[in-house]
Image 1 (tube, rainbow, N blue to C red):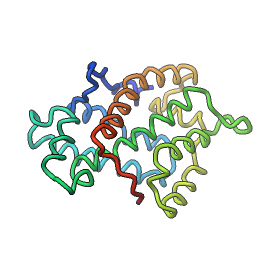
Image 2 (image 1 turned 30 degrees about the horizontal axis):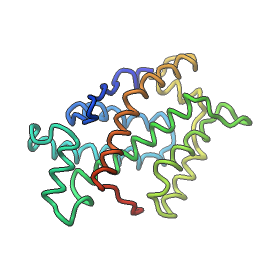
Image 3 (image 1 turned 60 degrees about the vertical axis):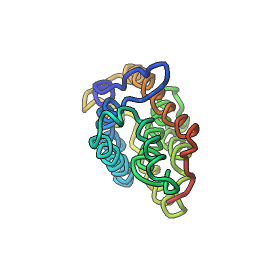
Image 4 (image 1 turned 120 degrees about the vertical axis):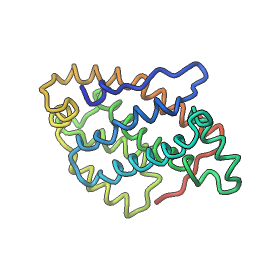
Length: 209
């Protein structure tokens, strides 16, 4: 399970603040995850995640001490941008990034929970559809939804997905899912903390693209 286990997220402190430096280092390894899903139609999600990571890093690099946590970045931009906020800067980039991270989380959790199509148990279409519907669909207009529906139909076999996650190694499904569950502990806590922050600061936007 090298792709995930080699780059695990750290445990959050009690106050659930997310260290910007460590967060950026961890998420930098996630875009290749979408290569494991096979379909080139999912490339926009991968590109969106990469682009938003770059935008957040560019803000952090301007003043690492001032922007030591993601919360400090969002709160600073709220004060700096006034009425333009939150549809601006790293705040907007993190808003979209967390949705991509939630997509990954729901997909992996669904697989780890053993959810499957009983008629086609070696397909992960059910899992990807659940992740898309819950994490991204509401933020996509009709045309984008149609494009992603085509991508979901081209989802890979579970066995191929597991092999890709394991960097080509043959790994037993139960061993792979055990690694997924371990990875999800701190990963899910981090994603949840970011969502909670956006709710607390009233930074969430519901517009679609």
